[in-house]
Image 1: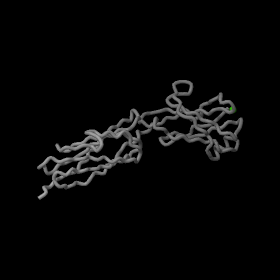
Image 2: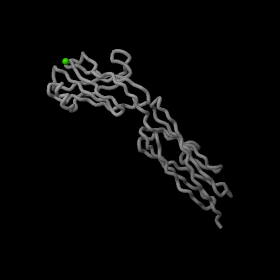
Image 3: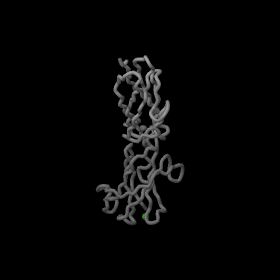
Image 4: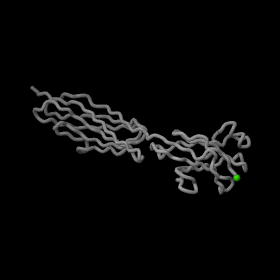
Length: 230
Ligand SMILES: [Ca+2]
């Protein structure tokens, strides 16, 4: 029969070891379930191979071969601020029919939602000759810990303006980690109006990840002024 242990469950990874006295030279598969046991309410999480160096204590337990440790990086499905139980089972060799639960299993993990965050580089204020249009470009970068979805609205203080290649609302479907996008507003002045505060508001949300939805928004503005041409 296999033996082993689920030694550690943190928000970074799960780890432990497993081996089978029938053949200490072969690595075992370890099956991971969440929320309940394998033969019950558990949801299959992953199968990992226990073939990493495990140190002298694993070697002692596994006939002198220490290469029976496993490590499993905590997936997003467990990072939602809620309590989860993780169960670990070693798969018997040969045949895999017996799957005893590892000692130390189950273990509880409660991990925070990934941060969602953006950085926004605004355009500088501009002064333009009357009747010229002006392009204003903000650069938004995903600086959080997971992909986000963005929607951008604008306020041009009564002047005519539109997003380049789009209308009044710009939807940026998906921005990966550290990916950036340039958001350009095409602004047209109203004759005789001299100065306007031009702003965009970015509302951003995580992709998937219930119940980690944490919509946030950020507004950033700059000034556009026009002078009369003599
Ligand atoms: Ca066996």
